[in-house]
Length: 456
Image (cartoon, helix red, strand yellow):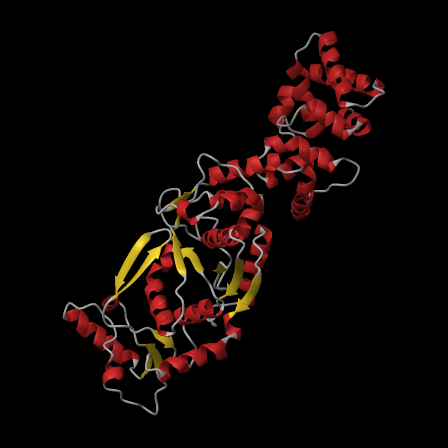
């Protein structure tokens, strides 16, 4: 059975790159009827926080990337890591190192002076000097010759010589295991078959493969997806870019749209641009992931979001819209059909925040600017609106078709074009000239609200 994992470090929020990794790992497991595991790599005690853990899990839930197993926490598996470290020491595949930081600095400077690549020279392996007053670290005894070779499912064949690798510290002087070691033990115990992650982890892979080999474990298949860059080709910045997944929720982006857009970063299925998660799971395969970095284009994301808003049932948008209305402190009630208003606005917006702002004028007209008032609410226009209000009041059967016919007849009777009525009408009803069809607005506002606003 295929088993994938997503293993974020809770030192901050779930960022865009992590979300795409989670999506690819989730999709590969689901497509092959496998299992998707969530693992919280929280061994960095100083930087890991419960707030970050909560935010990551909340973001995963919002995206709909629910795990089959987990979340598992590395801090709750310390006994297991210590057990395996003891096994490696017993089998002479690891050793204690008593070197101080000062000794290591001197060693590296000497190697640099000789034109050598700085790496640990194994002095504590070949000539161990036990210091009772020094708590040693534990180093993995990396093979000295040969190469680590794996067929990366995205990058192709990768080979790294063991001579390039250091004897990795697998336990700190206080006994706590290090990142690369914990990852190996977790992947072994959780029977991970496919490790799908960003290509910034490629340098970790040969070290992890060597430790797995030392433990006699099966080696997972690795797939390293390229990084996500800004649209100018630079690395994404916390200061300049929205990199947290939940920032996009705050920007009015639907989770389905964000997943759709992330899926298209370094992966594609012909010319298909808009699809849901179900379709993505049918199409997805690691073979179609590009080796080149992707560029994040906010305009393209908003376009994808607009398409998903149009395709989403208006009733399904009601919950997210109410959440935004409450956050923006925009008053609304049950006197108007909010679902029908959402249906009317869907083709006009590319995010839910804009939709909420437009919903506002259905419940409370905006304050029009002086330029629009001077241009559209002339004495002649106000006289027209008074006459129009009288016609509205006389309308008995309140349907959209009847309102459209009333508008058409009114323009013919008064010898005016539609904009001559529509612009002042929009301004009077909504406080802005940028609205959907005004006959639809009249219908949704209802007769009494329409009359109240026209005669205010």
